[in-house]
Image (cartoon, rainbow, N blue to C red; front, side, top):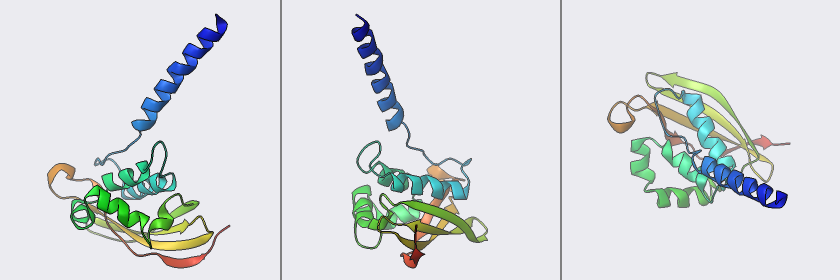
Length: 155
């Protein structure tokens, strides 16, 4: 009897945690600051396959600026780009650090230092822009990410 009760509780917890994990995708809204947008995307990419395969890529795509989506989309094409040479080190990377770099009216640039799984530290210029019209009006979204440059060795 006790085992059955414990089993029932464990099943309920498992179902609840699965529901909570699939609901973790964050969507753009005007309350999310520019650096937070990048942090959301980088955290997704760092744990790309959690809670399911390519969840991090989908999270990153959710914050892709409409102009960026037009150039890199649809989502399957965007996923292929991230899995290809040059950007594949973003997936399941060891750590990252976001540093404000430049800003202007309606845009912000950050330097992102990312330690890849191989220990190399890569630098990216990550630019977000405030959307001025449509569904994502007043939301900060990623408009461009530079090709990676070697910045040094990690830990």
